[in-house]
Length: 50
Image: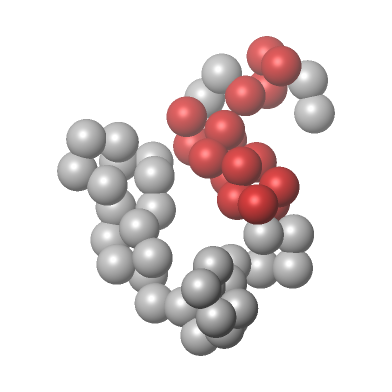
């Protein structure tokens, strides 16, 4: 992925999620993949809350 591809916030957050959790989103405390999405961040609507 090139730098100019990350200029869109939604694409940038998606790339960060893939780098942080290559096997899918999981709990940093226990490693469980039973994750519940809890809406979007109020100030940054492209940022997902879990």
